[in-house]
Length: 243
Image 1 (cartoon, rainbow, N blue to C red):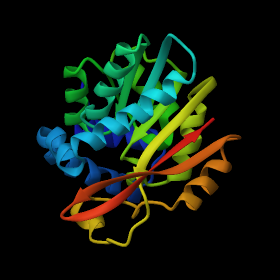
Image 2 (cartoon, rainbow, N blue to C red):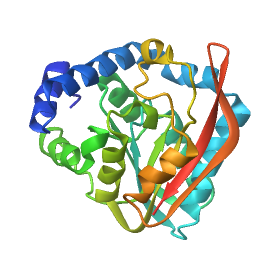
Image 3 (cartoon, rainbow, N blue to C red):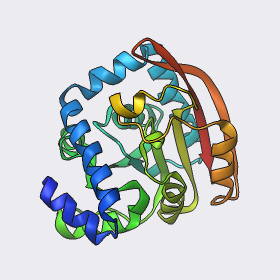
């Protein structure tokens, strides 16, 4: 069952979001609803194939470092599953069985996750545990409460409350697990708040490290030396791992 906008409003109220936050989230949903049919092509335009392969390889290597043959992964704000699907295939090609779930708030993205064989979970990044409980109750799935890896790719700058998202990720992280985030470095292109519905203009390495240190005992942040290109503007990328 894929929720309607009306149902999403009800879920957001049930999750405790105020009217201002609900309005902002609905605006994001409506924007990404229009993007959903072309989302995979849009990501390809942002990133060269070589860059896409590098990003996927970064994530796959982090998962493999857990030393487990079976892993349970939650991709937060998974979108169309562009990266989710590639991570799953990359792990399985290296002998790691991956049970992968994709959490997203946009109905059309959930449909695309399902078509790619990824279990879709309607949800909000700031309240992952509660979202899973509601999705299990209303959408007829049986998503787990804990994951070996919680992943987010090119989405962190969209979250309303990024520190709350990190706390929410930790709540559903199994013992010995890790959070892997790949996102855009801080930049000055404020027009992206309108054109791309970006909530934040990226984050500096110091800002990410500071946020992560408030929630996790182990924090590793570094630039990737890679860029995405949006409307002719190059934006740097970073990788953060929390445990």
